[in-house]
Length: 197
Image (cartoon, rainbow, N blue to C red):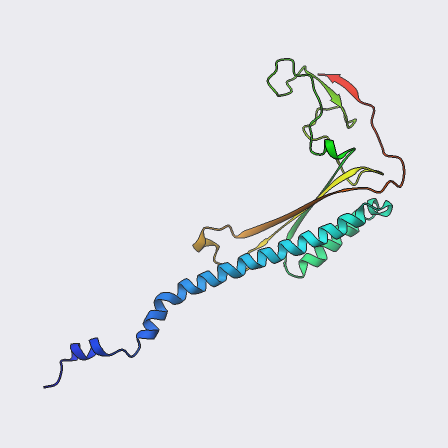
């Protein structure tokens, strides 16, 4: 007696591989795209950090302050080889010493709340006449200054899978370095003036 058509179909294993792949394929593809995207981000980060270190060292020379735009352009050109249509942000802040990097100006905390309130006196260390939570001056600074040089690039993700994974459509990679300018002249200093406003 011949087996029924249903029994024959149940025993037939032809085409099972394609059905299994239909279940596994999309997940595998999504994982591969995610790994490639993360690998690309790591590569961009490494190139950006390397170029920033090189440009940072070059900027500490006496000629570096006059060629800041050229150094920024060199970083942009190198990273643009792997990131098309990126948006770049460059910042430089100069400080008189390593110990004051990123620090606020000193103030007299009259009410002991840890915050400078209007009317409390402060030491205007950077000569701009206002209280600053970061005493750094924008730019390359002068001889012997400490310079914090940062760059970030924002670009479109490599694969259009951001919606499926809950990621943003763009990726931002940043790098930063802190270096000291060569002592090619006299370091600019500001007289410390106490201001009470």
